[in-house]
Image 1: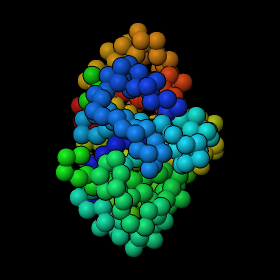
Image 2: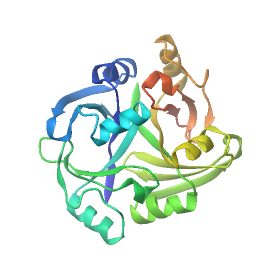
Image 3: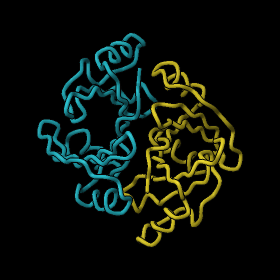
Image 4: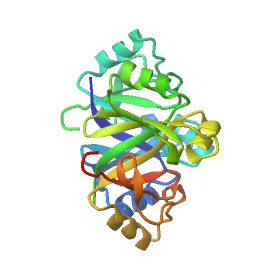
Length: 135
Length: 135
């Protein structure tokens, strides 16, 4: 079962400029930022209600986020739903014939995560996340 | 102050096919659908936590949603934040020099609403909504 929107991922050309808008202008509550070398992104999280906006700046123009930025100049990138059991949700999606990006859960900024394939969803990149303790 | 993500707007080529994925496959809770002639869309709302996914099928290929569908084939369209006072938020955005689509709040599916201009936000279409009683 999907419990809530965990976060909405937004690709930005520059994380500091992104924070100026989402934190300083819109007034969302900045919670943390991190460089995630293995995913090739700098990320920042901003809280709003029970959800977050996740800003993503690519560190590599050839990864998925980098290609998205080059093609579209930034914008809404993915929506992530929280679940208590990401492995179960992934298996349920697979059993329903949904195309997957990740064949098994992996560690991400939001805990244990996986991505469905946007081909399965009319162009929406959907992520499932199971937060880990302390994250 | 922005309280929560009210909904994430998703453009789909066909509302029934969209519901098959978001409701039947992902298991989100369908709450209502409506044809909004003046906005040229058919819409469906699906609840997840305190937020909703709003599916939008254009009725006119020349409106904003229709052009989005033609250009991208569907996908994440906008993010809407709930506020207790949409007029105040709109005025605050204007005073900060943010480009606006709506110069004053208008009635929409989510109550009284307004849209900021995506040029102000690095390509993200942001909506503010103040739900009305009974909506």
